[in-house]
Amino acid sequence: MDYKAPLSQIMLTLNHAAGMQDGIASGIFSDLDDGLAAAVLDEAAKFGEDVLAPINHSGDRAGASLKDRVVTTAPGWRAAYEQWVAGGWNALTGPASHGGQALPHLLNAACLEIWSAANMAFTLCPVLGMGAVEAVATHGSEALKATYLSKMVSGAWTGTMNLTEPQAGSDLALVRSRAEPQPDGSYKVFGTKIFITYGEHDMAGNIVHLVLARVTGAPEGIKGISLFVVPKFMVNKDGSLGARNDVFCSGLEEKMGIHASPTCTMIFGDKEGAIGWLIGEENRGLNCMFTMMNNARLATALQGVALASIATQKATDFARERRQGRAVGDGALGPVPIIQHPDVRRNLMIMRTLTAAARAICYLTAQALDHAHRAPDASARAEAGGRAALLTPLAKAFSSDIGNEVTSLGVQVHGGMGFIEETGAAQYMRDARIVAIYEGTNGIQAIDLVQRKLGLADGATLAREIADMRATLAALGQRNTPGFGKTHERLSEAVDSFERAANWLHQALATSPALALAGATPFLRVFGLARGGVSLAAMALAATNDGDGAEAVQDARFFAECLATAAPGLALSVMEGGAFALEPAFAGGH
Ligand SMILES: Cc1cc2nc3c(=O)[nH]c(=O)nc-3n(C[C@H](O)[C@H](O)[C@H](O)COP(=O)(O)OP(=O)(O)OC[C@H]3O[C@@H](n4cnc5c(N)ncnc54)[C@H](O)[C@@H]3O)c2cc1C
View (spheres, rainbow, N blue to C red):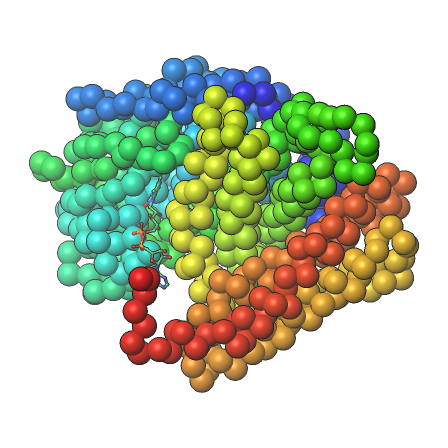
């Protein structure tokens, strides 16, 4: 399937929703300049378009296979991975001390969007590796870093995330895998992990598993969980590969989508025990894993944007070609391209603007992560860290919901052909479904937003976010040209609704937590509509300044007038619609 990375839209978002220009000007991004950013994006687009996209559909058809504990990836996967490593793509954000290019997350976010749009099932492998690099670099001992990091940064070895067990999904307190300390400082790990993405494959020399397990005698619950590095092959002192560790893949799942990404059942310690090393301190494993999970959550959010983006591209191309019916109000005989029909046009506008809003939220989150690591003074780093924490559940859940909604609309625009696999629209919809589920389901993200993030820094983080949105609205109010229509009014109502619902939740959490949590999902959507709409308005204002704003103004206006208008109603459902959660005899479905 063809794919063309939407580079001008990506650049507009980087610069005017997520402040890349300001970051470059302030020197926060060290060596990055406009030329380098554009060159990286151009080359990333070429890699996505020329190497990854051509094997996306065939990979979906072929899938991965397991025989005698060996997983064989889809045709073309190994060669693409070799090119991936040779091109240095794996090392984009890796630490310079271990061969990485240390480029900002913000630029990597745009690249991840491009690669995931071209081929999400392939990109999942390096995405997990990047998260593992960050966890080892942040929490690992010097010995672990020296043994693993440079190979993981280059992509010569891949990384995995092993949390889930049959009885422990959203609730990691139920993890049962165990780790027995050994006299030499290592541990022997025993347990079964399920649903492990790229837990086994044939693309790299070694696989570095990051595994949650309980050290013998550890307390119950999440306070007794530790994190371990468990390599597929042991690593000798000179860095060469040694014996096979006692870990293997016992099964591959048959899935609705991302067929070419092997989803593995992993057995640790079937015989003598899988040898592993502790990352960070005993019983603090979830802390370390969260470093990896936050990274993976943003990457997951970007998968939603990516699939929405390519689905929009495909649907638009199709709507220009497919001819049906007469144009409204035109006496001439049809058939006309369906893009002329207002209802199709509306669907395409919904697709385009939801994608753009989700992209803006994701890039803003990446920018906050960068500032949390790179800002010159500690208080700016802490503020940015708070912002990243607030925006991460929003980015993950809003963007993955958008991925599902937009890919479904993509099928709709194709009519019957959308339901036929050959078109490709169906694959995007199938691939998108998992994005709302893994890396913490969207329901869990909404709860995280309400329970843990609204009260960050005694509410100061939230207050700053609202002030930031209001500052853009003030600028919009001053330059409210006719082209913007009711953008200012509708977005102001959305931000007001968000603030009202947040205040209500703050009270409700103290008096009736069940009532508050019943409204968590619609509240997250209100946040997405407000934050996304305001970011589109900021982009439109900047693009108008540059004299090229017609399309950006149209997008901001459509989003405000047609989509953000849902915010006041959703806020009411947050504040008034939770009674069902208190109903003791709730019966579920009929
Ligand atoms: C294709 C695929 C790839 C995956 N890759 C990995 C991987 O690489 N590594 C890994 O460790 N895991 C992986 N997973 C596992 C994934 O992260 C889990 O499936 C996910 O976290 C949800 O857990 P669960 O399936 O047990 O659902 P459950 O936790 O059983 O949830 C079921 C439903 O109940 C809701 N729910 C659960 N608890 C609560 C609560 N407290 N409050 C409100 N609602 C709640 C959920 O939102 C959900 O709707 C993968 C899964 C799939 C399908």
